[in-house]
Length: 378
Image 1 (cartoon, rainbow, N blue to C red):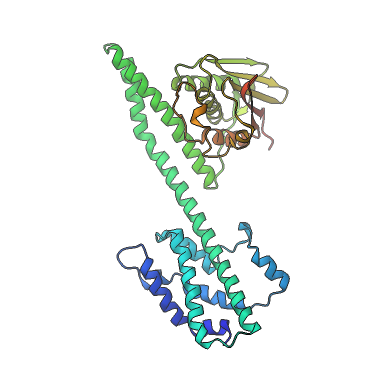
Image 2 (spheres, helix red, strand yellow):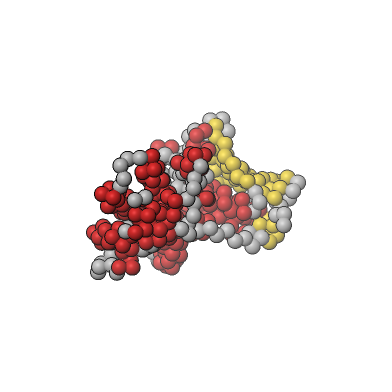
């Protein structure tokens, strides 16, 4: 009997074995319903049988064996929906793939007693079945992974949002203690430390929220109005100074520094760049930020003198969750970020229609350059 016909004729027997295996690994308590156990198993088998019977040229088989790019995978197939739902049921990726391994073994084991002597058609059926089940597995794994990514990013967004309220309370307490006229030096110093820690945590949470927004497919919203880039950089420098009180910051500007920017978003860009520069600065040199108005553009340089960043690191430094080695920090300074600051700085800069780049050398130090159009093109 041809394999496709066997699957169609014996689909219930195959599904019973699927149920038994799924039940043995199902992570949900109490016991899952029959619907949850099968979860598109019948439709997957029907699609497998149809695939085996579909005419296929040698060229199509060769292309199929190479796998499909992610943007061509059918996420609405039974296998695609199955992968997404298995994530929602609490399956691990290993458990998901084990279902397909068990399904493959079940079909071959039940078919073998009815299999004709090894012929070209039998071997062709086996090859087509393996191709089809590998494709179904790829679809399930892709949708499982995408669902896992969305779930993680949603969690990060909720976490970052919910942390803001208790952090605000901590910040207010630190500010209160540091200003108490009747408090002693120790109390004021502790209050200042609490305020600095709250400022660093606030920056991390802002980065976390922006990262989650981008990963969830959202654009960073901008409300550009006529602003002075010099004043935005000054406010960012004050933010960085609060987090790095032992660092000397210097601001210089020249030319017309006005343009249409989202003030708060752009301040976040320069705060992130300044915090990064302060973290990896040398012990004796200041961190400088220069603002220049040049024709239709505003150019901002953030510079520190410190360890040279290797070329390979410069290529990846704006990627999310990338941090320089702690050994490159100075004075044993702890990491002041979660590896999102430069990524967020790039995303906000791009949203403004600008570009950000980095260069590093022993002579010139490490320089981050942000180039912004005075007004975004519509």
